[in-house]
Amino acid sequence: VRVTMDAHTTTTTTPTAGGASDKPTTTTTTTTTTATAKLQVGITGAAGRVARVLRKGLEADHVQFRLFTFDVPAGTSDETKALKPVDDPPMHFVDLADAAQLKGAFEGLDVVIHLGAWSNADMPFPPLDAIMRNNIVATYNVLEEAARAKVKRVIFASSNHAQNGASISDPASAESIDPARTKVPMNITDEAFPDSLYGVSKLCGEDMCKLFSLQYRMETIALRIGWIRLQDDPSDLFGSSLGHYMRCMYLSQRDLIGYFRQAMECKFPETETGIPYIVAYACSNNTACVWNTAPSIKLLGYQPVDNSDDYYAAWEKKQQQK
Image (cartoon, rainbow, N blue to C red; front, top):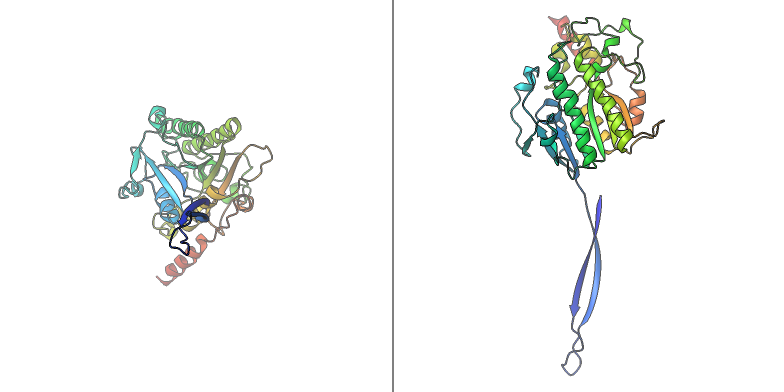
């Protein structure tokens, strides 16, 4: 909240009994007006599904967005490719892997949400140059420019795929899970175990966030986000080979917005190292969740409310009626 003081000067003339005027008297009154300062937030990957959900959910929160996008990288899902273009506010087309194009882009921003990435985890070994350019070089450039522009906080979209190698049921399918293979629940402090090169790139991004927090004292929050559905309904995957993974990793749009709102606005938690960097889980309150989300909930101050099993129960009922 920004408070401003506005001084108003009033001049009055008091007539005497003879009709002449005394010297004008000047009185000054000061009023206090309160205006809400908009949080200046940059979003990379702003044409994707996560960014669209966040913009819609946060637009009433006194947030002023600055949107950045680039050519859709190979491997982007058909669902995301089918989304209509976004033009309000206008997009800034920037190749995040080109530091020169990014220079000056974050001036005046309070927060940068870094979503832009090559994001297809279905290919355990995608083209290495796509991962390097869009996920590693781009993330480094975003962090470097944020530090140069003195952005206070960067929120990095990490992924459930950074740790799913510990519980994957089919190495050829990153979106599969076998809870019997791992200690359940997994903890954010457990050894990282990516299930794909995409997961490897997200771990690299987490470590780069930590490095920039160490070197520049810039606040960074890495969120290992679950699985978001464009229609916000996970039941279309139930009964398929992806069904159990969805039950574990579902992240509703309401909870996605809640996590990112808290990541933007919360007082930064104290850390054991004193470095302003944290990594946290971000999934819904799923009965089938294989993560211990309690520490992350405490860190961010957000309690997820949705549960994939509410959808699963309804889906099972429909199957029984067939």
